[in-house]
Length: 127
Image (cartoon, rainbow, N blue to C red; front, side, top):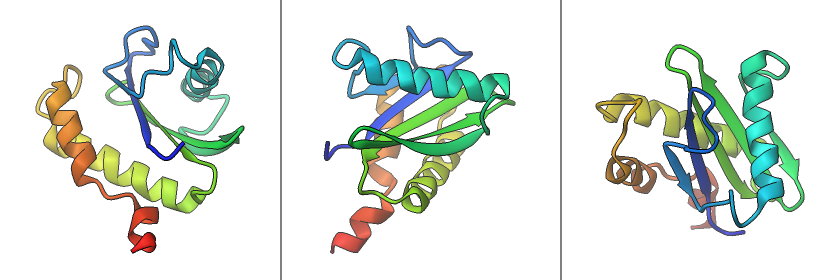
């Protein structure tokens, strides 16, 4: 998996994420369940509010923003370091909160613009 997967949930609604690219709910139900479980456990206090793990050939990270009930999940290739993924998550969430006008009802185009602007640190090293 060369592409970055980005998933944004509001109020624990896993059936209707605010953003989900690529769509895993139908294509990879097992991975989708793992990602949703990570967010749910973090919400319940059974995991830290942010972290990362490896599942198969993927590394995934989650970050909760309790004040807004938003949860961000990102998937990348397992070769990406946890530190790089954490940096990417920080940049993504900060930019989202700074630039999206209605964070609970964002327009897909606004999210896509942010995703284009946030540079993955592991891509910087490839140059």
